[in-house]
Length: 147
Image 1 (cartoon, rainbow, N blue to C red):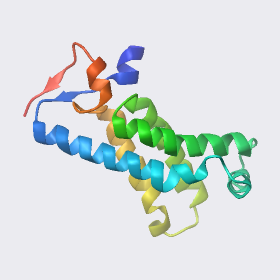
Image 2: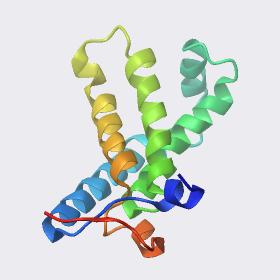
Image 3: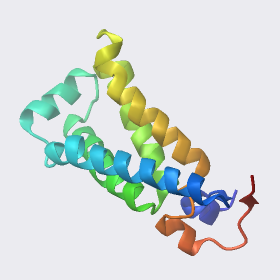
Image 4: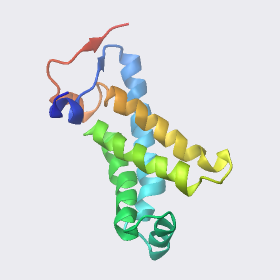
């Protein structure tokens, strides 16, 4: 896989309804993640840095910044469909930490949001932004699925 394919690649689906559905999911999920969760973590508070340190991270301030950035900037990139796959990867990593470390001993209802964001990010890691994202403006010679 070429770097360009990794950064902005994706499968272009010909169905207008499918592309519209992917765009709606991508935009809502990205904006929700950025503004409901990420923006409050930037800059990281002392309390958030301490919580990250309690998870076992050796440089809690750095990882708190990375976590907040993955949620805020990753969410914004996902919403506009730019660098969708790398943004999705960072969201997946961040949500994995939230689900499997931060909420490890919590009931599923406490982990549900992290799993939801993680699964949606996996979808966009696989598909890319879809037709209605900025990434698609840079793609050439892409494969098209018809149905």
